Image (tube, rainbow, N blue to C red; front, side, top):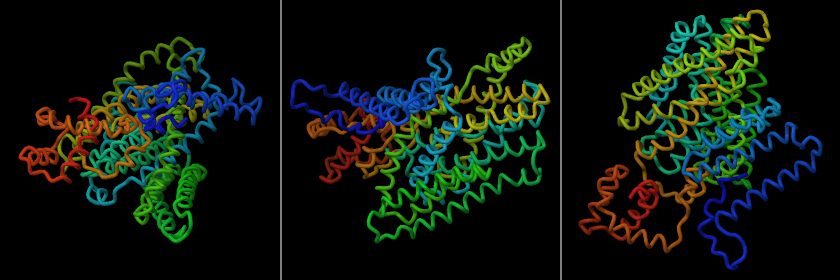
Length: 555
């Protein structure tokens, strides 16, 4: 399943025998063997429960197939999570292979929550506190302004185009305004590992703002859901949002500081203990906050806890990060395969409502109008995000990138898109409410289908072009990084490096006007041309070249 693991093996295999399979084919066989063994084990332990048609079997197939989909897309140099989302979606909605409908929603929800704990831990360890201090106001502007503006625009369009009442329009707005941490965080961490945007702390800015944006949107939705169905105390509902954010940050800081002292630095196996403790605490936050119905606070607490703990672990952070990266390779297909499998198109055709004609007409009528709501929200979102990132040292390219990174919607929409409909069904009184709940769910699904693949692809494609690349001296970490984009840069043999070194001189004039190569690079470049380059500088220059896969391929 760890499709992205061991990407470095392929070029190094020089088969000694003529017979055994090697290269890509061998790798495929290894994967098939791993999946076969895993299923055999499941069947041996669970017997009937692991046979086709069961929850476990469906889960297993969705995860294994998603991992394969991610592997294929990564081979084609795309974002792996795109393949995983598409496979999960197909296994839910394509007739004859739609086995994902047998998955128990509880299992699916819990596995996704565990995956979220892993990715939030990884994000927290990767946050840069200097950049965070430097960009603190930008983080707040980017977290709140686009979310609020998109909600308002969605509500207005929903009121006048879809005839939803204001309360429902605002609920729709909050469902649609949440950015998806599951898509944004992994793609940005992979850019960060390659040094893109690190100088200005852009990955940190986006990850921190995404986490706050998320809590804000979910709690905003909760407030208006409570008002629409008049459940709970209105005052408490209104104060709930800010309280969740503060409680989340406070819990994260306290547990993070506890992690400074336990385990002690002198203990044997300190990194292993830290890894287990941190993942355990963060899973506890995510599941515990759901148990006490404060779910927004949990995600934020997990991020803050990892971040605060890592501030003190400066020296010993790497083994823990590597452990998290390996966990993520297992949980990535689980998360994205299951998010894809959450998206159910059957109600787009009105199957859920007994298929009576006027509903069918209303729902089909709603696809283009729903699309209009989505586009209006996205347009205003890009503009406001761009404006929100001003008043600091970001260039227009970097602002544009932040606006693009602010597009993908997936996790939140899959999680809360159906809540309004479920609540309306539970109340069971007003058919209009059920219809409105369906509209929200339909538009949420449209949003996932359009923005998750598009946003993920855009972040991966535009990141290297819009962000400045800093020279990072950690070759080991980038080769082991889990995400698909890193897996493309295979480790080269010495011969190839020598050849590159040689070609390096010939390609200079091409590189001169290459837009990937910013001033830092051109500065070396002039030294080089004037022949004043010391040996050391020259080595660094070549290394810089090789850590520039994008530039290499385009030349």
